[in-house]
Amino acid sequence: MLNEQLQRMRLAQAADPLPPWEARAQRLRALEAMLRDQGDAFAAAINADFGQRPAEETNLLELFPSRSALRHALRHGRRWMRPSRRLAAMAFLPAHVELRPQPRGVIGIIVPWNYPLYLATGPLIDALAAGNRAMVKMSEFTPRFSALFAELIGKYFKPDEIAVVTGDADVAQAFSALPFDHLLFTGSTAVGRQVMHAAAANLTPVTLELGGKSPAIIGPGARLDSAVERIMFGKLANAGQTCIAPDYVLLPRAQVDDFIAGAQRTVARMYPQLAHHGQYASIISDRQYRRLVTLRDDARAAGATLHPLSDAADDDAQRRLAPQLLTAVRDDMAIMREEIFGPLLPLVPYDTFDQAIDYVAARAHPLSLYVFERDRALIDTVLSHTIAGGVSVNDTLLHIAQHGLPFGGIGASGMGGYHGEAGFRTFSHMKPVFRQARFNSAGLLNPPYGKRFRKIVDLLLKRG
Image 1 (cartoon, rainbow, N blue to C red):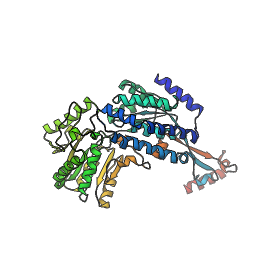
Image 2: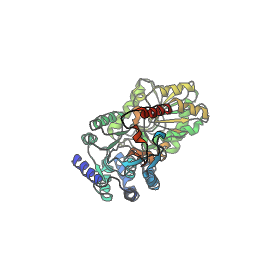
Image 3: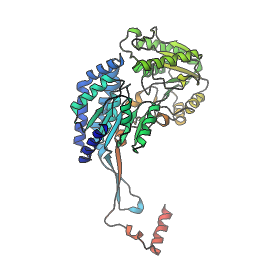
Image 4: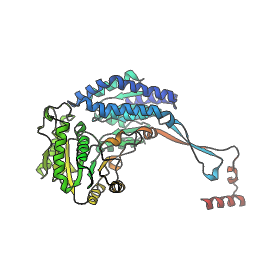
């Protein structure tokens, strides 16, 4: 069935291999209309899947960036489509060269459960702007939203424009093995390896948006209160179930106690009466909840100290995990080896700023890096001596919302990127075209190779 759907879409794409901007814009506006008309329904479905996920977070972190990305694509997509002239090498003048963006064809998109709306529509917007058709595999861990998204896509789009697939891990495995023209996967590094392995059998190019342990570095000159507030916002949005959430904090040893006190004040202000607060998300599933509890309890048993950030206790029935900081953590603890993906935040003190930089540089490249500091020279030192998928300075998360910046990882945190024009290029083949002039000197290099030929080649070699 999946193969049949893919073949139908391939035939439709072959019949219209280079859709004009008007057709692409019509599809983007259909998606925009769906988000405008169905935003409340999407928020309600996501809330039901999580057990509790406030509509405010869905609107801010999923609906707003999706609609903003649509407006950006509609504003700039026609320009992205234009062929771009390049200078021909001097030896080949008066020839002309250019790059012509061409749709890749049918794009496969595998969506995770943590931000199911944004991580479906984000790559979909870029794929449609580039003139492609798309098959979208939704997460089985958000069944209500996935079913609603599939139903509504069917109402707003033709079956050969966008097809939505639901199902379990076996369906996802079959989906990733389809011979797409490009495949984008968002999820864990472990599953990303499996997706890449399956795609390799078809030589399908992949974009992998993975995760890892994204650090926040607080420099010696940082405004600590501001750093604490922005780190806790980035950590506790969606209860930490964010691939670019701060995973641990590197900070001056003398500021550990002040950070803990500041975090407690911040959480009290952001989530008053957290146990009964409707704006603090639940953990998505019993399995994820138990995983987080095990990470925390194992760290405590191994010597870590827990610092509750509110008076609220864990609510097992609602899968609501109280936010906590951890100190006295060690590298051999699972919480310092695995991506946390929840409201637990280890603090790692340093004695010199170079130690903090070396700590990040010695580990797998993270998806995101956060630097809090006022000294531009120190900020530049961090940027020059560390590698990360993306960086926000004096804030968290916000680099992902910039249409002019690609979003993606590097190494264990992913490969490739998308968003805005970068996404348009990801889902396009930038076809190089060489146009020979009517009057040219190419024939001078034809065999037989005599004295004239050797003089010309000698001249070319001298000029490089």
